[in-house]
Image 1 (tube, rainbow, N blue to C red):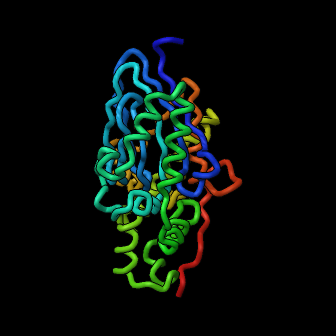
Image 2 (spheres, rainbow, N blue to C red):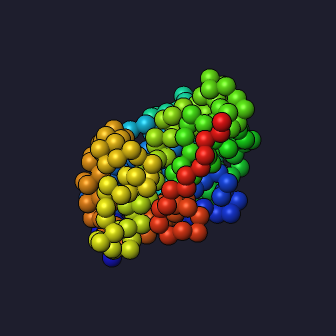
Length: 282
């Protein structure tokens, strides 16, 4: 219906699956929207149709993105550890930055024309995905392995990584910052919080109020206790876990399906979050 907002996210095209975790189309209604963006460990290639694409670097705290009334936004969410190779520069130079795509890629004018002339937002998103797939360069396999170890359902600790990957802590930090934009410890904090957010979104999707238990979710997602979760949630998102739960429920009340964003943070094949505890290497 005219004047209403919509948000549709889904898995990326197969050619982009190794680089991106999801893609989306957002259409804003008659009022402008200040959308909160939460750290997720990767960057985002996004475009308000009619404008040039922009690259959002990895966030270390929540920020807001203003979308004009009637605007349509398409976007690609990059996986953690991908940004440095895609942008062709150290990713830590892009941390907490929102930069014009033309500052990163010289050949972006043709893409801007393609997006502006696309018949539908879906067609424009196809062009944006194709560009991201073409721009992907060789990734750092060591950082990829570190990211896999730090996924929230694995329960991996940053302190275990140097021994696990046979590298010094200093070298690991340097390579992680170059590829992902943040250090190992910061990436762990962000992915752990994303594990909690995934747990919240899965619960909202099931509409199961009896399942809500913040203290249990804190332990399941790797926090010491609920107070620890509260401190980290306020630091990274700016609100308490309870407020985040309420806001997520309200935002999804109109039927938005966020499975594409939260399922990668759950144990593969499991509909809910269960932490997998693994022994720390001696």
